[in-house]
Length: 178
Image (cartoon, rainbow, N blue to C red; front, side, top):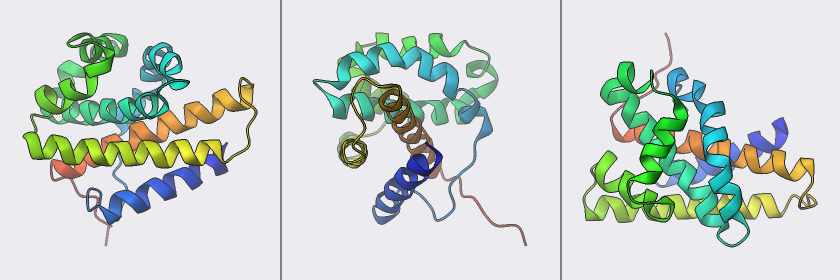
């Protein structure tokens, strides 16, 4: 799965750099990254339920969650980081329900204006499309352990891309050491 994950990461970063929403160096935020496994466990029941009929939603919404986590890290990680990840996820999901979690994150958590919401939504939709196409072109038999592992890797990359996008939007830049 490492090669699968690396290839997907390259595809997504290429697109996000083209759109000017991430820098050349991928940002590292161990606090947000360390929440991934718990976030996956919280998100999986919703993500799996949605995937067959709405794969773009299933893949895209976790990118919005990654954005929210980066915002929480910037605003007050001492408080947010101490919360159980299930509580963080349920807080995001339950404000307006799963179907409108994207709008809640964009409008209330990230506090984007109408233009920012549209641009971000379009970028997330394209990332979900890239990811879904990549996943479907792997010829992995549905319902197998390999299929589940590939889906989880897709979610992980989307979460990290959401984190990277939001860190960039807040002005964080990764610089090389001289």
